[in-house]
Length: 209
Image 1 (spheres, rainbow, N blue to C red):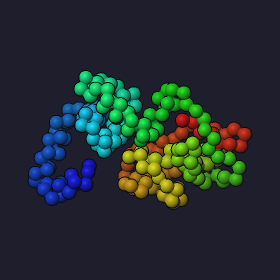
Image 2: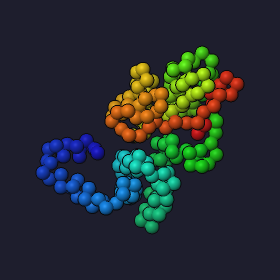
Image 3: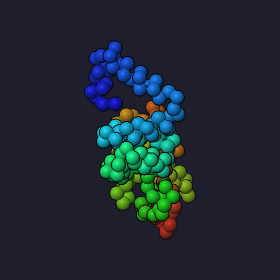
Image 4: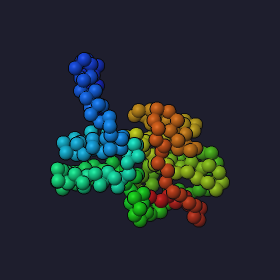
């Protein structure tokens, strides 16, 4: 929600509250996935970028797949037209959402060389940049590694290395917290960090997306 709407809710709850009650009631018979997909389409139709980013994130957190999002956009072609669909896809590509990567959608994924494994202690975590993508690399044991996308699953905020204290990673934007050992969200949110497949080859940690 925008700062302006937050202000109006606080300043005139008697008036603006009816608007939000209307929105809630008119979608109460829809499952969360469908309701958020419809919201995505309305934001694309109005070409409201901030709203589109917000509701796209909500749709994904409610279990919508990237293919379902793309299908919803294409099904709305008679209303949206090609130009607005391309506008939406351009924003999706700019957001660089892990779920929309070719490998995640069943396309051809590539292996990327992240770092050398020598000298990294068991239980330690490093943040690295790999081919334009931020990663948190956690060494679980001598043979097991976990590699997470550095962006928060809430609103794709890129989490810096200073946000890691011990085993707790905290997103600076809305303070979602994650256990770096498992990737699970342990405070505020309910979505885990995106984990990428990884393997060790010739002393190098390779990551796939």
